[in-house]
Length: 109
Image (cartoon, rainbow, N blue to C red; front, side, top):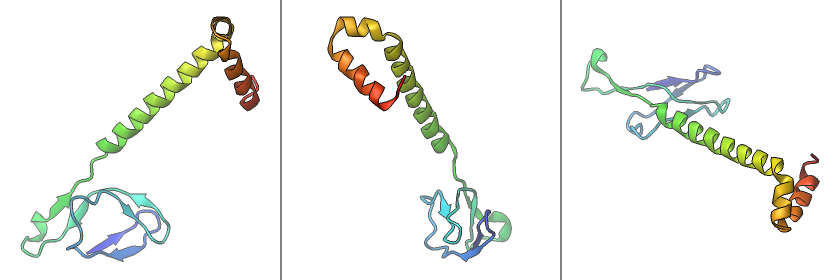
């Protein structure tokens, strides 16, 4: 089976026996472009109109990036809250002073 990279248009011959439904992404060895799409799997028992399709779902990728974005936003909000309440935290516990001194060395505020 012949597959073409959408980025550099390099063509590759792929052994259809090694292609399974577990393959979700393809990587071009020429330009290192990674893509996922519908891959036509040729089956000699089927005619051209009834070829099998492996559909790669982008739901998994979007769910991962959504979780990553929410996690980053929570961390940023937590740091922002800690920085805003600096004086109250230092009065509450002296160890916060060490934390803010360390933070000042990393990121001058």
